[in-house]
Length: 109
Image (tube, rainbow, N blue to C red; front, side, top):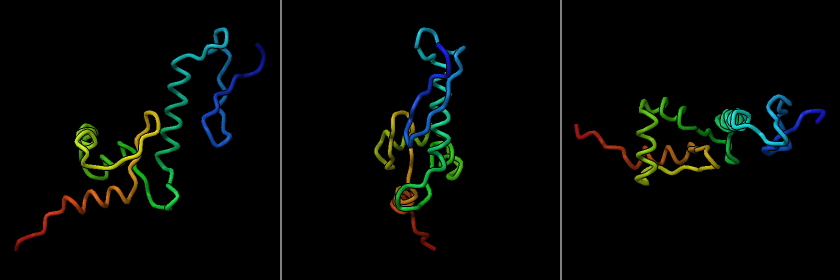
């Protein structure tokens, strides 16, 4: 097979896969993982149509000073809203603000 095979993942973008990673038209898990990692990086800085900031697990956990496991617990408990596209989890700025507002405790002094 000559040339490079491409995996399309949206927006008419495609990343070439070197032929060394192809075996009779099968894509290796390593190449799929690399593509998924690139997609996660792309989505991490993506702004939703509202133009507001978005977070992925890593950026939101750093922003709030908590672990990614805590975020998973909050998602599992239905405490924080999120959008999931395959394995990529995205939190909108609006959802984070709503979550923080809902859990805000007013000082009593």
